Length: 148
Image (cartoon, rainbow, N blue to C red):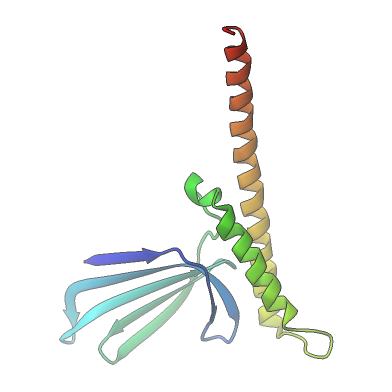
């Protein structure tokens, strides 16, 4: 089995009609064949905590929707302020496409609310890690002064 993970943010309209912000996509190819066809699994993970899993084997296709933790856990990902800003910008752009005379569907608003909550949690985690690093730098500065 081989796999590839792409962590590029993309707006994507899902099969339920909701425009979501995809945070990453994982593709897996299995050497095992189903009905004589190679099996490909695609996992798309979105900012609102939705993960779609699509299994394709030739003409056979199944799609499953599950939840996932959209707030990054790895320090490298938490502190990726470019992605954080891009996510906020994309959500702003999506919302700006609607107005009082053109309201979004309720499913879209629900997706935005979940995505916004995850953006806030992501920002809070990034701030906490920054404060921790800042405190450690302050300690180093204090200790270094005794030698100067």
